[in-house]
Image (cartoon, rainbow, N blue to C red; front, top):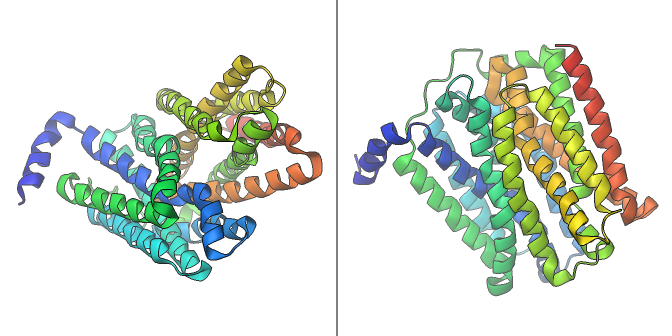
Length: 394
């Protein structure tokens, strides 16, 4: 056994579940940065490939739709595999996809690279969430998933902004090369330090895991996630535009505001870890109320910087916390096949992201940018009603 592996295994008793969960979080950081980094690269990428920004933006839609359609069957097929080699393989796929993005001569090759990465992403999130819960033990699943989802927070706080900054120094292709190197490094760390995952509880495998699709309550939880993410991304997709055009934040400072939004989100991640295990549905309702207040207040308070910051803090906390809360909620509802349940939640979330971005665009064209927060609040209120109905049926 390599020396590095011996060292990491020796540390395992002391760190218990902490080290493997941290490695899963780092993996999550790499894969989520791969998904969303392109948002900051679209203008440069479009210019280089001779595309419109709107045309290049369809790469985002392609990624979300691929995750939504292919995530569940791929996870049902791959979830019986040993987890350590599965996670390493996924990170290697991401490394290769980012290399393909870096050398893409045209939109079609770039689209292929995004399609390949999108196939692997939901498998990672579904199986990583389940594995983290197993490592942490019963009653600590929410804590464990929230720690893995720190990778999401870190991607929004550091990965995407820094990748965008790097593009200004080494070009958008250079950013993809750097991201490929990160994915390869994470794969090597997992190979050296990630212990064998505990055995997956015996349950239906392969296609039989889809038995959870016959559970109407489970389906209701998945649809609730789609509605929650539609509400979140109706406004968040255009937050930079709101800050610049409505709040009057200089374009050169918008990135720092977005980074601050992500930093505040770390509080949301910590909050999710505390409240999710008690009742995921109650936590969902609480966070949706916070989200509604934050999104709805941002535009009216835009002229008052301290109050605007207060609204963004509330918005940022709720936004980030809803990622792990929705994942835990759906996984608990689909306990007979948690990996598939987790991936169905990721698929629903990506469907919500695509729908929210589209609905937000329509709202801007028809009602104006100033009305966007209110439109998002309507979907958040619908999600609150749906969650309360589910809670009443328990």
